[in-house]
Amino acid sequence: MKTKSISTIAILLFIGFTIQAANKSEKIKVNGQCDMCKNRIESAVKSLDGVASAQWNKSDKSLAVSYNDKKTTTQKIQTSIAMAGHDTEMFSAGESGYNALPTCCQYKRDGNRKSNFHGVTANTSGKVENSGACCNNK
Ligand SMILES: [Cu+2]
Image (tube, rainbow, N blue to C red; front, side):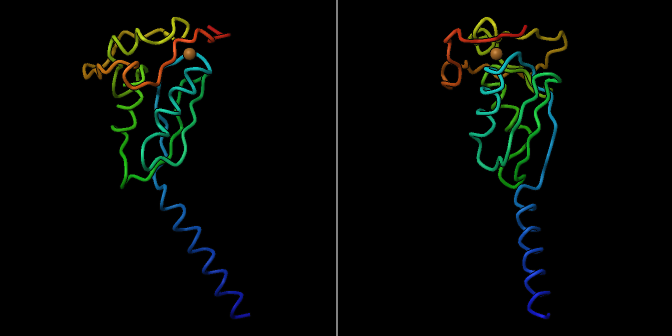
């Protein structure tokens, strides 16, 4: 009986630590169009150290991300998305990064773009492939 409760405590502690390791979950608005955009956005985020999971939702243009906030920040996450060519609620992609997206991925940008652009082209980050295999839905 006693060993059972000790192991229960051990398991609960373990779960507690696991949850604490990825201790922040957020929803971030990220502009995009299609499944290719989804892959591009998610792989840009998952390439960061400390990101536990990233899932972009095409219909409401939101990214659900959970990460260890000792290792990364929402600024870093949103910078890396902007550098891949996608506008976030905090940062806008540079013109060249946006223009490097396949035409069908060029989402409609809203008028109120942020002033802090991240002008790194998507090409230099190697995240954008102009394969043209894109976008069934506009
Ligand atoms: Cu796309």
